[in-house]
Image (cartoon, rainbow, N blue to C red):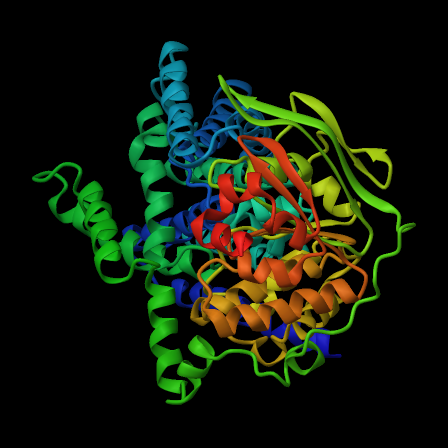
Length: 597
């Protein structure tokens, strides 16, 4: 019952909006205004296709015109050359758009950041010139006088509005379902931190390929419909820079990462651009491009995340009580909320027969001429807390990346429970029980703490199980009272605890912690120490990199010290801190003086 009500609340606003839009459009009799209303829905759908890839994964695409143009030319050429109706051509365009997305994604997802964005820009430019070279400078769709409906040609332009509103309804509902699904949570995890997403078991490459395929299919579909309503297709009109810019702009202006953003952007910008073009197009050619350029500048200056999020923030601030914000932003978990009331729980001493859970054998890795890790060998027993320390540049993070599958060793091997897992990707290692946190916490700021943590339960059997795992993990680290708080308002300690909860949501047997105490003060470190010891007391093996040595000495069972990529020393804390070689390489004069006392 509750699930049905939740789905109704999710879908009903979309249905109500599309129904109201269609009803109002029926009262419009001016043909130009009818065309404008049709184009609003067209660009809203195209913006949704862009938003699926770029808004939800953070991979900015400057080349969505490639899919849109392929869809338009598919419908136009099938109709003009083979006499095939657009009722058949649009589904074909949808399939080709999806295939194009898959083929483009296979090589392009090897790139990151602005390299990915620039590579995407190349595809529509290449296709524009290919279609010019093929001699398709202009393809006109034939006018059918008899039985025009069979070729998607109607004397009443309002039929096009009804058709495109139906497509918009289907697209919006699909996007809403994606937002609330495990798939959508996984996309969110990729957006906030792709490495962390891999570490919690998400196969990011496969998911991105699925996403660009779906995004390309939607763009190809609406590109084909666009060809039907305009009756003519040219390379510049469907592959040009302005086409990709419009998809990006309507999504950014309305609000990235939400279903309503592209719709709001299209409702504002398309009528404005079309009206200005009708009135001043002869005097000011390209006035539509000016409109979109001004819109981008305006949104960057006034509402960097778009109209939707700006309005949502204003409404939230009005509802918010004066005391709620400071509590969420700065509050520390109380001692009562922490495991064992803030006291470090007792741990069962490790016996000599405790099984080895993780083992590195002669692991080495070089980058160019720099040997980052040199023949490192050590083992970790089940239930142990092992600390890896060393001066800056000693190779600690590279070693972690080798253990976690982010980097493949040049030599040596990594064993998990005696099984060779060398070079396995992080998502597969996560499924084998290896969790990890990262030095830089990158939460999805507008989502709740619970939704952030749920990304760590990606490998769960269902959404309800994922929610249960997330709740249990948050209670485990003392964040049970902050489940519904926006992650962007959390203090540094609570962000660290949230990341730890995200790793725990995957139920790891081995937890790799990368500088978990970074940026924390003394009381915060003490609270986090209690959490980590509590986790270890429950049987989770912990390997931790950290520079806060006074905390590490009280936390770990054993140290491995790295220097210049090689193991310098290994042993109990009191042995390592008194080792002259370690003192000279890492600990410094303060610890050296203590050792000499």
